Image 1 (tube, rainbow, N blue to C red):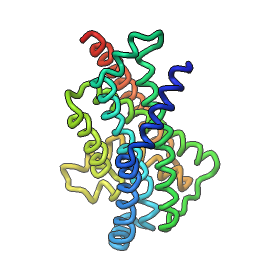
Image 2 (tube, one colour):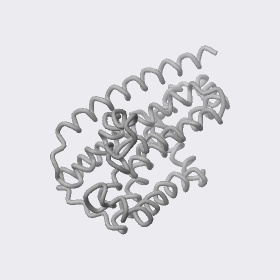
Image 3 (cartoon, rainbow, N blue to C red):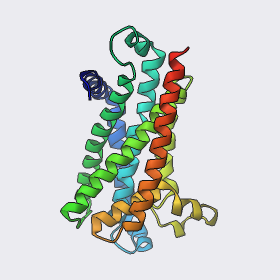
Length: 251
């Protein structure tokens, strides 16, 4: 990693801290959802999941927080490109693409922190993980990979967007997708036409992997499929983002 990438990463982190609206929303929204489901619906839904609802829902809310926070990268990337910041960098002896790298790395760092905050709130609400040290390393690695992939998709979305509003729409996609998974209720509790999608989509696989790692349950199969999904989506998003960045340079 060059000095330029470190500078762009620091810049992106500082911008995130200054954008209090997005920063607070990215943390408060998942925490509010956690409070709503555990305290309001937890008693009713606990029977559906066969145990403490806080233990069931926490991994899903962590992914919701991570995905929503990573999705904000779309707006940041679009702003840098549309406002001419990237064009100014092309006149300097540095790689303009480093600004995209900075956005991606900063997103991974800040969203790991925000998901840790969500986990602390979950513990206060009754979440009791029994993960081993290896399990905690696996949880951290899986969360980082999930954030990285969503950030790459968000960066590609931001590069393709024609306006700030359209770039911001990716946040709604990231916020809505966990509801069509097993993040909040088992797939069998969903309408029949959604069950197949919910049972096999990547958010479900990552959620189930996190649950297994948190409780020490076997997760080899879900981890394998999660890794394959994330590798495919991340590789495709990185390729698309690079192509869109080159296209923007030719405008």
